[in-house]
Every structure is written in C-alpha cells, then in structure tokens.
Amino acid sequence: MPNDLTGQAIAITGASSGIGEATALACARAGASVALAARRADRIEALAARIEDEGGRAVALPTDVADERQARVFIEHAYEKLGRLDGLINNAGVMLLGPVEGADTDEWRRMVDVNVLGLLYCTHAAIPVMKRNEDPAGGHIVNVSSVAGRHASFGAAVYNFTKWGVCGFSEGLRQEVLHSGIRVTIIEPGFVETELLDHNTNPMVQAGAKHRKEEIGKVLEADDIANAIVYALAQPPHVSINEVLVRPTGQRT
Ligand SMILES: NC(=O)c1ccc[n+]([C@@H]2O[C@H](COP(=O)([O-])OP(=O)(O)OC[C@H]3O[C@@H](n4cnc5c(N)ncnc54)[C@H](OP(=O)(O)O)[C@@H]3O)[C@@H](O)[C@H]2O)c1
Picture 1 (cartoon, rainbow, N blue to C red):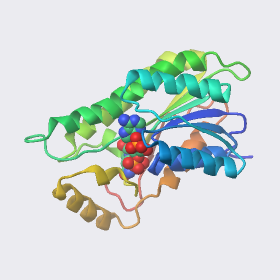
Picture 2: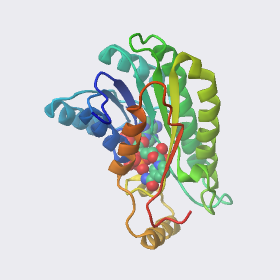
Picture 3: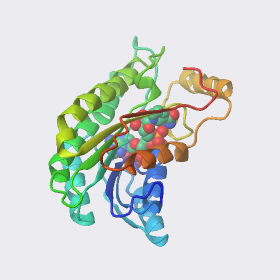
Picture 4: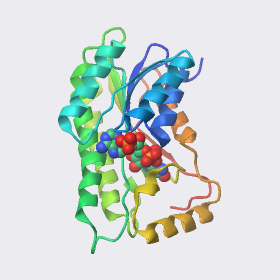
C-alpha cells in the first residue's frame, strides 16, 4: 500500500492547528500512532479523541516547546506511551512579521524560541530515543521550514532568519545521523491557509497577506503539506527525501 505508516510511532509538535493538526490526522489514517504536542491542551485532547474514535492511536501531551525541560519530557513521554519513536515532526512555529526598525523585540524572541530553539530541543531529546529502536532501527526527523527559508522578503527578515536556520541545521544534522539510519527531511511550504498570520498585530501585515493571497489565487490547504510529510515518512529505509518545497501553483516567490 502506498504511504503506509503502519507500526510507526510519530511525535508531532504544533498539532493543535493548521499543518500540525492535518499531519497528525494524516499520519494516524496512514496507520501510525501519534503523540501530539502544543500549548492548547483542549485542542490536542480533542484531536486525540477524534483519532481514537476513528480507530487510531493518539496521545495528547500539552507542551511548550520553547521550554527545554518540557520539550524533553514530551519526547520521553511520547516514547513511553507509544513504545518506540520512529518519527519527530518539528512543526511548531510562529510568524510575526514587520520591518526590523521599530520592531517589538519580544516578537523576535518568540520566533527564535519556538522556530529555532524549540526544534533544537526536541531534536536533541529525540536522537538518543530513536537510537533505542530495534526491528526496525532508525528514525526520521521532519523539520518544517518554509519557502521563507529560501527566499527572503521585506518585512520577514527575522522569520527568514529562523527558517534559514532550520534549513542549515537540518542539512548538518542529516550528515551526522545518517549512519544511525536516522533520516532528516526539510519541508518548505508556500502560502498555506492556517492560523499562522492571525497572531500578527500590525494591520499592514494582514493587508499585505490579503493582497498576496489575491495574487496567488488558490492557496494551499494544510492537508496538501500533510500529504507531502506522509510521503516522505513512508519511503523505504534506504530512501531519504531530503527537501520538499511545495508552493501553490500561483505563487511566484
Ligand atoms: N501557513 C503557512 O503559510 C506556512 C508556510 C510556511 C511554513 N509554515 C510553517 O508551518 C508550521 C505550522 O504553522 P501553521 O501554518 O500550521 O500555523 P498555525 O495554525 O498557527 O500552527 C502553529 C502551531 O504551532 C504551535 N505552537 C506555537 N508556539 C508553540 C510553543 N511554544 N510550543 C508548542 N507549540 C507551539 C501552535 O500551538 P499552540 O498555540 O496551541 O501552542 C500551533 O499548533 C510553522 O512552523 C510555520 O512556520 C507555515
């Protein structure tokens, strides 16, 4: 069966909405058991209940990935509850846009804390846990970067900085862990309809996004990215999908 994840145990951060929620559902429907992390406990508990109602296996583990201790506990509990850890999807992220000059530097810290450090903490905790896997051995770390990790743009400099960091880190990590059978995949979505923009307080950002969306036409849905992630996870152990860039057809950069 194509895209079969039967037997895999997969931990997903940022599973309370958007791409993470869609990916959790897609992984569960492909046969994986899933551990869900996000700060909004009610959302991930409802999602876990929905997956279990559909006959899948899911555990909700409320976590702030920007807190190193909580990130480590998430990975350990995912392993304990699911019995192994085959996949980690580092998806949690925030995008707070605006020019560098005059920016609220707390917003920079939030982006660096979640998009960069949260991803590093979960990865650091997951590698030794994945190395415990036997029959099959190995593991898979999927890091959600962005088209903004390849193309910088006005008003996105600090978000660009965090997503560029995810790409550089992922390639270095890939070279370090390949001999342990651990694969690393970078996912780079273009414009996806989610809650990501809603946290911006600058009205210029909302107006700019609306204009950009009109230019693109039909933007991506979270399921479109979830499908790409499941495809990467479902490859046989000798096949490593290193990088997947998915844009809406109408998106120029
Ligand atoms: N939408 C796009 O166009 C697009 C394009 C390229 C890349 N991406 C990337 O895709 C990823 C998912 O974003 P999305 O578009 O699906 O947006 P979203 O709907 O806003 O989802 C973001 C997720 O991150 C979680 N999160 C934020 N801070 C967290 C923290 N400190 N600890 C744990 N979880 C945290 C949120 O959960 P809680 O608030 O409940 O904690 C939420 O589940 C992000 O990395 C984003 O940068 C999105």
